[in-house]
Image 1 (tube, rainbow, N blue to C red):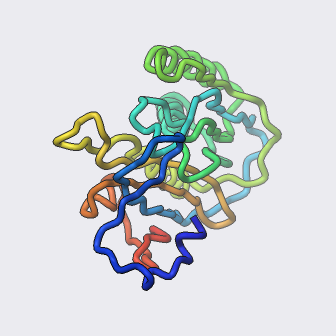
Image 2 (cartoon, rainbow, N blue to C red; image 1 turned 135 degrees about the horizontal axis):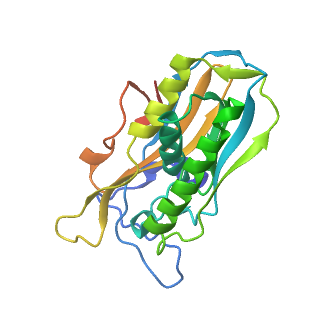
Length: 244
């Protein structure tokens, strides 16, 4: 959208805009939703890893994904949210070190893949396998119609050099867990249409922060910042560019 962002709006004299944007030839769209993009930076601290531990990548793959606006109503899974459910279940059975976590490719797309690299004691591998098997069945049942190709596996990895310390790991996992994703509210007059939504788009670990990008959408200006996020926004030119 670089063209419209650089357009000289002083040339326009009207009071209303009719949006003719559409993905389908012959179809005209006469309404749209505002979409603030939220970038979250969670401070983290890395510490040396214990090399005696075994490392595995907990991988979620095979999701349909889609556009975070056009496809948000289709009931497809968000790989980032599935991954955190598995990690929470692992916490109940295994004490693990978090070395890395990534998910999604673009902030405005429903993520199709996500993975976390964890370190565990050798004797805990059976417990990990049990959780993987259990949630493979859970996801297959929950998304058997809208997202039937979900794959969950634990893949051996080389030993990590560094891991997130306990406080950092807790901060990152809690944020991913508690952040909303999906439909927040439907239109009261036309319930077949989504009024407000939010999509937890991408997750990545940097040197000193976890970087999370979230796409919010609403056809009402008052719903432009959707529920499910806490902290302080950084705003430039009327748009949220960061959230700390």
